[in-house]
Image (cartoon, rainbow, N blue to C red; front, side, top):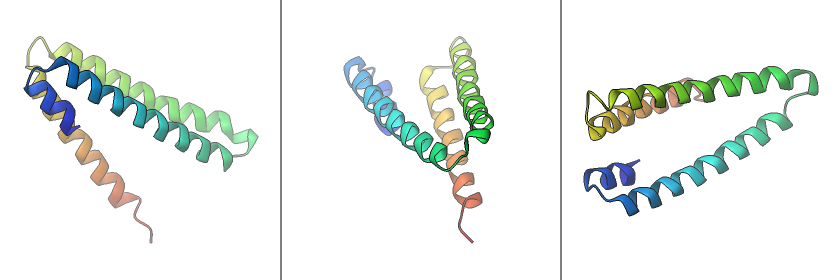
Length: 102
């Protein structure tokens, strides 16, 4: 996230694309590994419910991207990116607190 913000603030297209591709590749690997782990622990009868929940979260990320795109007519791209970073960090912190082992 820091690399993307740095490239955006410098208005550097090539580093932005390179860092975005790296972030996309790592997210793809993490999601694939997570999906494989979840499906291995889920019986065939429960897989449809699990996958529908996972894709519900994917669609909510798409909605957030659409809203961010619409906000570019009102706010600068850097301001939107910083706010999204803050939102992601808050979400990660909440997950770490909620998922803490007992």
